[in-house]
Image (cartoon, rainbow, N blue to C red; front, side, top):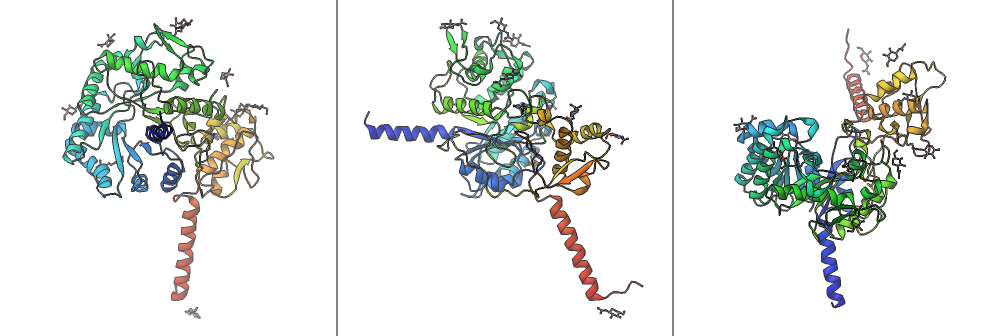
Length: 480
Ligand SMILES: *[C@@H]1O[C@H](CO)[C@@H](O)[C@H](O)[C@H]1NC(C)=O
Ligand SMILES: *[C@@H]1O[C@H](CO)[C@@H](O)[C@H](O)[C@H]1NC(C)=O
Ligand SMILES: *[C@@H]1O[C@H](CO)[C@@H](O)[C@H](O)[C@H]1NC(C)=O
Ligand SMILES: *[C@@H]1O[C@H](CO)[C@@H](O)[C@H](O)[C@H]1NC(C)=O
Ligand SMILES: *[C@@H]1O[C@H](CO)[C@@H](O)[C@H](O)[C@H]1NC(C)=O
Ligand SMILES: *[C@@H]1O[C@H](CO)[C@@H](O)[C@H](O)[C@H]1NC(C)=O
Ligand SMILES: *[C@@H]1O[C@H](CO)[C@@H](O)[C@H](O)[C@H]1NC(C)=O
Ligand SMILES: *[C@@H]1O[C@H](CO)[C@@H](O)[C@H](O)[C@H]1NC(C)=O
Ligand SMILES: *[C@@H]1O[C@H](CO)[C@@H](O)[C@H](O)[C@H]1NC(C)=O
Ligand SMILES: *[C@@H]1O[C@H](CO)[C@@H](O)[C@H](O)[C@H]1NC(C)=O
């Protein structure tokens, strides 16, 4: 092949593969990074696909005019009404899709609407099952009526527990039996509208739940013991999971349905093996695999579209399935890269968020000179609202020992409450300090200044009082 042609093909394939990788952008944080800064972060790292979990107007405004492809999310709680009312679906599309797209070149490039967020997750029981297909159908009809039927695809993100297999063998995979009927309806719907099947794949959770899946196998290590499935050899957990999905789809008559990996990542805190070092190893392995277009044993040389989970840490995510849930970010909550990986930006180094606005350099710690007999109970109470997940076994602050762990929980509570003085009281046990109490890997974070921060509120309130006082003094009113 002539060298120039090779370069062109190489460049084209790089551009093409880079397009297939996106990120999930969740906002379940007490102090989310401002949307405009997040969009700059996406652009500076050449990330051009993003999956959202709702339709926050500030987020969509920030994405307007960018060329970033967007997946909008419909929360599970809306499925019932969207199933029962076409009108509700039309209003949703009008408010949350049409409005943002019909702005010429300045709109939002909406590619998918995700109906529900893993509505078939086993822990939810069957509460959402009866509404999903109806809601998806009504949204589809509404999109067609808004002339967006050819631009926007309707999808339903599925959790990995939608599938079952015998001894992890892809060839023995099928849908969870309580979902057989619903899945055939879903696949028929997706197929009719040329929409892909969205599914979460999580080697991290698979290796935690299944002792047969080694950590090395999950981490794409060349030295990992392969798994054999009759004549096919699996070298990593990702391929095993992906082909589990492919087999289950084929088994019910959809062998060619496109599979999009809706969420995939590795957390960095709150559990054993959740570290930045292992996350980096996993993400590098994943990116090599995706950029290399190797495909999987059942779909060789296949370009796989995947959304990394997640862009940023979120300190208010539910920890029902584990304390690691708040630490999936490639970036910390404030947009700083945790490790090196090429997500398509063409270098190992990720760009950090710029001009991040933090609260003051102040922390809340426990006052050792006080009676500490009730300190542990007080800290546990703080942890019921604050984020203490770093203190859990295997977490980055598991080591700091008592009473350092008390200080950690006090500080988390104080930061989440915008450093308000009264949020560092703790029945007289709290002490505000300007000396960073962080030790080794255990960082005591300072939260972001956000528009709802107490600082601004206090500032405004003080300003109002001054203004009123000066007006009064000018008017020289007498209250007698
Ligand atoms: C879903 O909507 C359809 C059409 O309105 C309705 O007939 C059906 O009862 C709804 N399903 C549930 C479980 O409410
Ligand atoms: C648009 O989406 C938002 C956020 O998901 C939701 O609160 C709102 O009700 C939606 N609009 C309509 C008309 O359904
Ligand atoms: C683990 O592997 C053994 C031997 O290959 C197999 O018999 C067993 O079913 C596997 N267990 C799970 C949970 O997959
Ligand atoms: C669902 O499908 C699986 C595999 O095809 C089968 O074993 C199971 O019996 C089915 N369950 C129902 C309820 O149809
Ligand atoms: C898997 O298959 C390969 C070759 O296909 C073979 O060398 C290897 O021993 C097999 N591994 C197991 C555990 O059966
Ligand atoms: C993963 O976690 C297990 C359980 O705590 C631990 O024994 C093992 O050393 C960890 N592996 C790595 C590479 O951190
Ligand atoms: C000890 O702390 C708990 C939990 O914060 C609180 O309910 C209780 O009143 C405290 N007891 C004393 C003596 O301060
Ligand atoms: C605990 O502390 C020791 C000594 O400071 C350190 O080597 C180790 O990595 C720490 N473990 C964790 C989980 O932070
Ligand atoms: C702090 O450590 C002590 C002693 O190990 C433990 O009893 C307490 O529950 C810990 N508190 C928190 C908030 O983790
Ligand atoms: C305010 O009014 C009082 C009498 O009501 C007068 O003595 C005083 O000088 C006035 N002050 C100003 C600032 O006008």
